[in-house]
Structure formats: structure tokens, C-alpha cells
Image (spheres, one colour):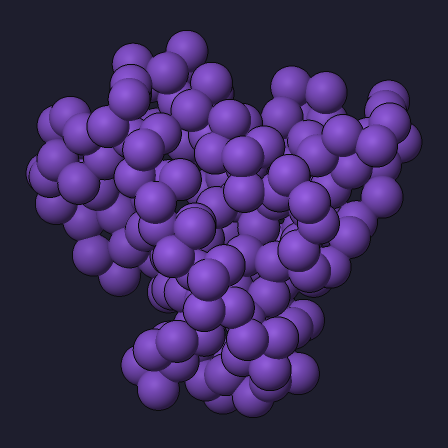
Length: 163
């Protein structure tokens, strides 16, 4: 099992590495290509350009000085719900509890900030992540066929009430 450390906040190279982790994993396992990776990079860049540590959070899991996992909380529209985004564990750490630790850190942040709810968008078939979400109390709130990720998938929105 690989040892890892969690880092809260921006670290140099995080944007590129988080986009790379998503691009590689989703291309290999889900045949999502340049459209998907570009969307991750664009949305993550926009998030970081307006990042406010009073409402937003970013955590990276590092192994040997290299980012191998991430999760973010986007609090921009938190009057409705904080948005959990960019949750991933790279091959070097997948399956050793990093996902549980990242998700726990993000949800603790949401509780500390007094957010009433957290939501996330994903798609059907990401079963390991779904198990983590459901163990944390998330429920499937919406499901439909869509193409927001660059090809037809069964899109899902999960929500967790905190208050």
C-alpha cells in the first residue's frame, strides 16, 4: 500500500495534474477524449481563478511528491448547495483509502462552513465512487440520459443534506 499525504489548498502544478488524472482515467475506462479533458481543465481553471478559501476547498493526495488524487468544494452557489467536484484517485493510490479520506476532508469542510447541502454530478457505472458517496449519506436525486461529458451517458446528480 502506498503512503500518501493530504494537502489543503492550491499547490503548483495542481491544475494540470488534476486535469491529467481525469483525462487519462476517463479516456482509458470510458472513452472520453479531448472534449472531456478540456472541459475539466477549463472548469478547474475558472474555479481556481475565483477560489476563495472562505467558501471553496481543494485537497490533493500526494505520493512521493506527486499529486495522485483530488477533490474540491465549490461554494459559489452554496445558497442551493455546495458543489463537490474533481474527485479522483490515480492508479498509484486507488483502493487504499485515499478516496474515503479526500471525501471526509471535503465534507468536514462543508460542515465547518455551515453549508446546508452538498451535490455532485457524475454518471452511472462509477461504482466505487458511488459506494463512497452512499456511505457518506448522499442520495441519488436526479438521473437522465445526457451528453454533458462529451458522449451519451446516464448522468446522475447526488445530494447530501447536512442541516
